[in-house]
Length: 314
Image (tube, rainbow, N blue to C red):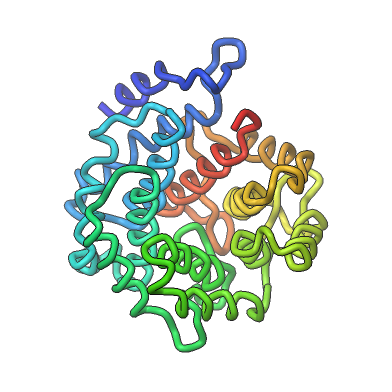
């Protein structure tokens, strides 16, 4: 049934996205893969996950808003779950989902995106989502995520990326009510050490329009880009799908006249070159080379979002 759904989805391609020689575009193949995989976790495991129903759902919500075919059965079950923020900790009862703090960050971000893209969760649900997320903010203004002293991964994010995304959720829910929270988060982001390419890209996502800061961040990212077009966790390290995706998402946040188009084009080419026949991507793990379904889905979701955000016809 999964491959049947994927094949059906491949037949419906947005008119604005051209095909090459009759072949489905990388974006269409990526969306088709997630259409198959996102609903599979809850169906097969009886619970909801950060990777499928958080990251994967965000990619499908974005794809649907851009005109890609995302069948209701691929996302509706997740949306029902996301509209119950007081139940999210129940996922921790499953042995593969024990970090309730991280789960809330993933689900909160997906629910907020659903609200901004027209899926229309009730206002009281969005308000409750923001309230619960605000309670997790640390005194220094950040949302700290334990990555085991390693660089953030597709499912752990890292404190810098987590803080950027959490602050965006609060601003979207009620900018006035949570002004102090977001200001404190932005203050932390300005002074937090940038220990990786991921950290630098995440800060650029937060400050795309500040000339002094964004210019410095862009320069650092361009210097860190490898000859193959991708980015690794550190400059001159082997390029990884996740790190490349986050950098592309950051560069896409810039005003069109400030976007380094050549670097973006090379980054897209790297991602497309790494795409699997299934439409997904090999998982980015820390350390590299491990096998993980969770990381595979989250990596594939981030890569899909990056390709959607940077498509040259958008």
